[in-house]
Image 1 (tube, rainbow, N blue to C red):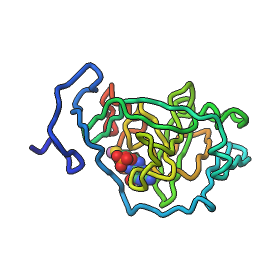
Image 2: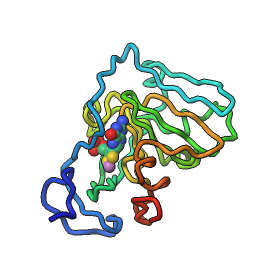
Image 3: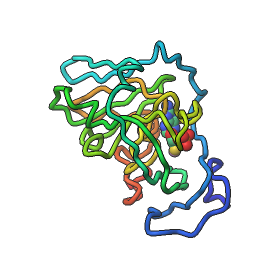
Length: 199
Ligand SMILES: Nc1nc2c(c(=O)[nH]1)N[C@H]1C(S)=C(S)[C@@H](COP(=O)(O)O)O[C@H]1N2
Ligand SMILES: [Mo]
């Protein structure tokens, strides 16, 4: 059944009104990584946001972990057609991280440890719609799934949710990331089935 990618394991479950078009529900949590899993020492971990004027805001691991914590329960949708409902995470909302960041920029360009990149409009990081998470299902986020910390942006296809997130550059102009350069949609709304450029 060619409709299922290698990342899709298990039996498709009945669709629900929470299943975007062309998606199938799974209880598994497939791993999809374009390269090897980077090992990141928490003593050296840092996350930074750089604004369009070059000003950098940086958090060490203890600084990041001392920020107000959120516990999103969300549905996630991978462009390879699996969706998973009611996933439980813990982390820091971007509203918190961006609180004191001065910017007029419209776009965000995300870079991960290991070199993966992706892009999205800055406003999609706001209004309680995006987090940097460090816990999944009550446990430290497994390295394969992006630990120690990854992006979680459930209203866009999961390739936007960069694992092992390292930094975000705020830009006046949109800049395509790894999959976007390879032909994936620059925005990636699962409900509008924006899988590839031109969708
Ligand atoms: N750094 C990094 N982040 C990444 C990827 C990747 O290859 N590298 N793959 C993306 C894709 S295509 C998907 S579907 C999800 C998969 O997350 P998971 O492996 O935790 O299921 O991570 C996204 N984030
Ligand atoms: Mo994906």
